Image 1 (cartoon, rainbow, N blue to C red):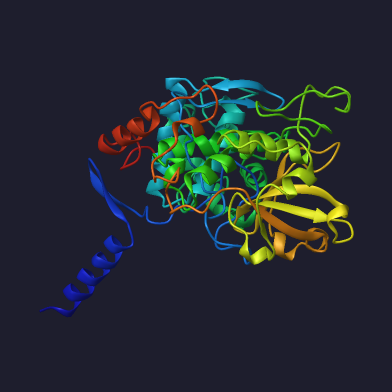
Image 2: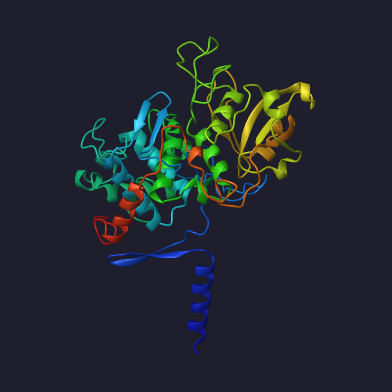
Length: 414
């Protein structure tokens, strides 16, 4: 038997065992690995890889779709967002193009959050000066002709960049983009006059990518409830800090909200809200939450969804702050007055936080991977309020995009 044939067979076998798959496109075959869900999500600052510290579980920035008929969220400094079928179809094209370029989930989230900020995922034929399309790319800046930029497939390929034209650098051309905060990576490509505008869309973008790839929260590498708790917290990335703010329904207004701030969370209000989405009630006080579950003494033993506590003097009386561990050495928290809900990467190497780390608390019961309840079946009561099970319309659109060759993907405009 030919040696090359044997090697090829072994590679294919290894690929199949690892959970990969073959996706057929009408004029070709795109090989896509789905075994390990990587990237960053619906939320900010996630980086690829193991992160160099902290417990395992969900890879950094894992995205998932917590359920519901439509993608809806309250976006800080923007308002209530509810995705239309047009926006979903455009998102499917972006994800399809990204998959064809082997872009990890983090890159897909960056692309979707950029298009949300620039056009709210609509293929606009107008914009600032000569800006056009999903990403508001400019012909005068070398992104392509008007006809090319208003082709969603071409626009997505241009945003991702790589060895193909046009000349402005795309995401793949930005050195070290995988280690950047998603909003910073988006700004490197867009060079916007509003560099901080992208961050607020990260949570929504993560949910859209989760729906596009049909990644249910029960499928991610933590328990289903952990995935839902993390998705709930990431939904409010960029939300203002208000001392005493937050309840089981979301951010609230308090007398201590800064001037001009409608509503927000404090540190324990954010974690209270996130856990309420899976039917768990926590007190609105760090001391109550410190005593709410099973203690985790070592930072390296933390799992995604665990609460993380910080003390000024390493005593219980000195506990002053709580955050949530996301996996991949990252924490999401509501920091302090004047700041917003954000993700802290590289926690194990952050001297400020590690000097105050006193321990973690595990609220969720240990469950088999992929289970949303002790029975291993998703608990319908764990879905966010007001949502219900429905067909993943964006995933269907993505499947359709794969099956009918999207214009420009195979030999179209370059």
